[in-house]
Image 1 (cartoon, rainbow, N blue to C red):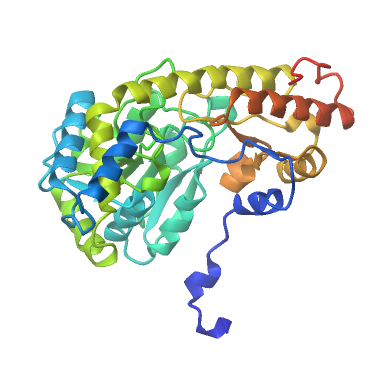
Image 2 (cartoon, helix red, strand yellow; image 1 turned 45 degrees about the vertical axis):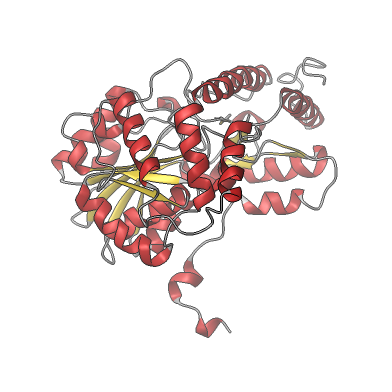
Length: 398
């Protein structure tokens, strides 16, 4: 039957994350730090707004671009937080999560063979969606030595006549890195010098620690060449509601709108009602979750460092990205043996690109009890493999 499948479909690689979830699903008593979604339930008042919309019979489509009240609330929030003005009529588009938003952005920019500089380590979908949209992902590596900050020289070295756009995702999944203003300006300089569009995935914009998030479009001369993607999933614990959005100049959003209306019609109506409630009345919920993530962040990073798995300080999202170089194992072997012997699920960094090789991703979007149990299991694993000088007996006993 494979002869019926397109070459592009056959060429597309399966997610490097899914394999570990599949193995874990066959086991009992697994502690997982692999899932990249909030462990919080959507706040009750947001849920109730969605449920009430169903009671009122709001079960049809909305406008293709999204409920106008929601688009206006999104535009107002962006202006309040970043001083950027987007028209809710023509410059805000509500999508089915950021995944659809990214696909639309790539599809309207790329002709076959056009190249996108994709900063890595990155979410597994980023290069795959570039390929799906007909483009060629050109991976731009970062390193722990620079706290996974992309630099202007690293981007410029990969520019070719086919370069069309730069795709950045900060705060980062999987590293937790957040770009400093200095490094953001380096990206901006390259985009302006080479006349590139910047697609900035900022889904974790509200989950930052000890810093202020900088919207890429707010940088000098970047508004006109930037497509910003964000949504409700991470900050408001609304992953299953599937509401994302795009803010960009009208020529971009109008082109994206055309594909969106044929592909999707409109984002889920119930989710849009809930999203409006979240933006208008959910600020205290975001802050409460952010503070709890921050507490867990400090616990898990300290734990990895004490066990000898060097971990730089993540400044955003809810991931830690420790090095497992001290073990002498490659990241895939490390994760497989850890899962099978201690029933602890982490994700190998190489699943997120070559610059993630030798690291593992650990999500701290889970309870403190799970994090402590995970550290205890990791400690046993390290000790059992002869890393006793790096594993301190009993320190993280659950």
